[in-house]
Amino acid sequence: MTTDGKKTILSGIKPTGNLNIGGYLGAVKNWVELQNEYNCFYCIADLHALTIRIDPSMLRKNALELFALYIACGIDPEKNILFFQSHVSQHSELSWVLDCYTMFGELSRMTQFKDKSAKNTQNVNAGLFTYPVLMAADILLYQADLVPVGEDQRQHLEICRDIASRFNSVYGEVFTLPEAYTPKVGARIKSLTSPTQKMSKSDDDENGTINLLDNKDTVIRKFKKAVTDSQACVKFSEGKDGINNLITIYSAVTGKTFTEIENEFSGRGYGEFKLTVGEAVADMLSPIQEKYKTLISDKAQLEKIYRNGADKARYTANKTLSKVYRKVGLVSR
Ligand code: TYM
Figure 1 (cartoon, rainbow, N blue to C red):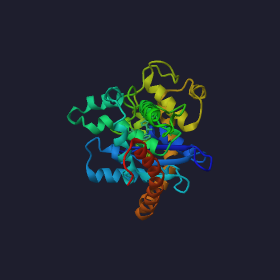
Figure 2 (figure 1 turned 30 degrees about the vertical axis):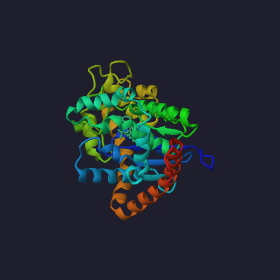
Figure 3 (figure 1 turned 90 degrees about the vertical axis):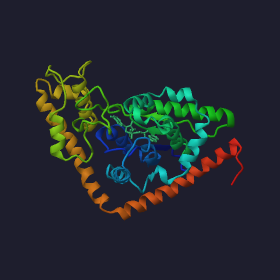
Figure 4 (figure 1 turned 60 degrees about the horizontal axis):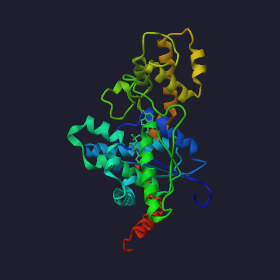
């Protein structure tokens, strides 16, 4: 809790590819909704992006575009602290300390580590293994109460709480224990072409993913190609992964309940439904894209915002890090 009585939020996204509607509906939309009630820190998790091999100029481009997209999605830089993780060195410093309070066994059980190392056997690096510890440092530095994320990050939030509790049990109440906050609808958006898999920035099939910067024609084309089933009945039920995903997306975008959607499309075919979902998504993206165009063309203004954000973030982060260093017994600088 900060002096103004508001609780604190921290969240972030890795700039490893284009932001898609999974990340938007699962996380960023909530960030926008929560920004008035909380003190919010939103970072670009660029250090996390180093766990995969990525062309340096592409990483820089992705990171800046993602930063502009945060604002274009409605995150007000006047109200929130927006920054690059790598600009606040306390993240890496706390991460090292927390590494020493995290067990090999618990990191080995992380499903994202297991999935990612199985998918990319050539590059199972130590950073991929300790990834959740850096994420814990991101959160704990700001004493975050709430972390709005998609469902896939829940396990990382649990280990963050475990690390914080372990540290607190030795040194007293140093860290706030954060809660994950996931949306009721949209916490796990699936790929349009492989609807048992999550929609992901790293998907090789670009038809599976709707990026925030896809134009209307592309959005509609991808929805038309979305994998469904042969029943031609818009109803949310077990085994209909493709249709369930489209109903979920439509619900998250329009706010309509599943029952309302089923009634609206009763007796109508999948073709019509896919087109309606595609149009709703394109309409949602259009104002974001307009705002993005203006923002990305003014790099000097973006720089002003992220420098200012990092200055503010550093101030809070340093308070926590100094306390941690003192508690563990390091001689003060
Ligand atoms: P990342 O970059 O993979 O995803 C960013 C956010 O989007 C959510 N998300 C989804 N939600 C619903 N459906 C999907 N298909 C989907 N895909 C992604 C993710 O759950 C996440 O909330 N480790 C984090 C980044 C991070 C972070 C943090 C998050 C670094 N430090 C501190 C919170 C707090 C990650 O890789 O997210």
